Image (cartoon, each protein chain N blue to C red):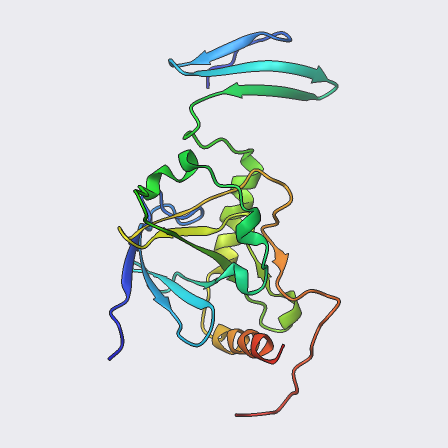
Length: 144
Length: 78
């Protein structure tokens, strides 16, 4: 039986979509991917990636202080889930980017989410997902 | 909009707990120091606008399923 998608409430909305506060969160089982779809406007949806799948140091290096994630209302041993938004490129996979500048954080215990924006210029809002030194072209025309 | 003139090292107070200081002036750029509660989000405006733009661009639509599938395969094949 498919699990009921969890509704995540974003008290501040998401930059660019400040009026949309509630999103369905649908993680995939086979990939480090999840879908975040507005309850009010279901054509507004984001694809999320677990950053550690591609950027192993990201979570360790991330500097998030308690004050800046106050809206998440993290208490005791509640954990925070970190995702980044993918921007797909339809023609060229190597142009796919992820937003490391503004990760999406969830407190799964209370269903509250927020997009945090770093002031640190090391983090790019358009970080290429596929590093240029190892582009691995997929074989065309192969259908499972 | 309220507009105030300030000289180097002069300050502006916003409410009880926010203080803005003109730290340095050089040509057409001004360095500003801000003392504020740590839970107050302070961002250069262009960064917020960049994230807004990036989020709007990231909204997935029809036809993105295929692109996503290729990303997943890339990951699996790696």
